[in-house]
Image 1: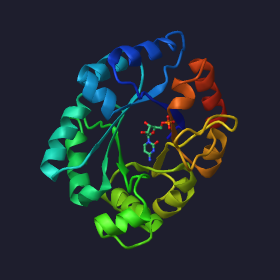
Image 2 (image 1 turned 180 degrees about the horizontal axis):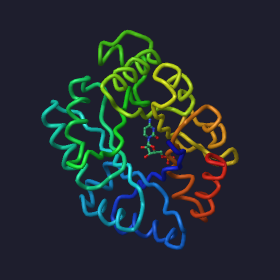
Image 3 (image 1 turned 90 degrees about the vertical axis):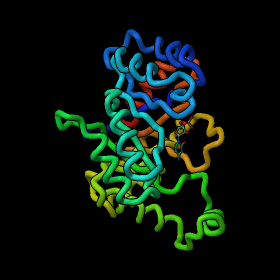
Image 4 (image 1 turned 45 degrees about the horizontal axis):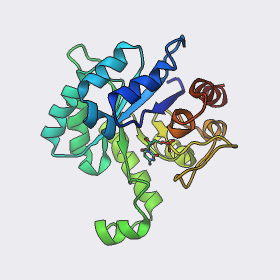
Length: 234
Ligand code: C5P
């Protein structure tokens, strides 16, 4: 599986997202992009079709979590949009993840990659214990969810680049780590807490880095994207 940089298209409207992507119209390889809930709920499935038609690969970050049958059917619809990567919450259980894989598989046998969210990075040990009644150390909980996702047949998880090595040790080299929380060594950290550079993420073993503001807010987004690719992919 080739390493790649995924740009987080965190824009609130179709116009802003497409306006940003216009910067890349002259690039031979269109960047892989992540469409999250904000843009998808604002612009609907047409935004996915339009960006796909421009030649981008798409990670549709909608984090599904419902009963297995509902997730199976929703995954089938999303797979029909011809996206390349989808995700769901591992907390939905192995049964839900297995149902998702059934739903996502297209009639010709192909399917997008499916990765799991484990514990959100916004959840602290304290909150997990008080609100979710989970009393194991959070890093063990993350690895347990990762193994459940692997056992269900999923392709990988979203995690911090700093955890990518441990996830590969627990689940195997082929199990993908898709990692946000990436900043240039000389860049703004913003509201991210545990960050690392594209180069360090490569060393630890991330398979895909997800980069938002360091590219979307850059004075020269194409130069910033190229710098990410050069540092991460080499
Ligand atoms: O702008 P920035 O590089 O911080 O964007 C990172 C992207 O990755 C955002 O879309 C954010 O929602 C997402 N993300 C994250 N941390 C997680 C999971 C997702 O930053 N644990």
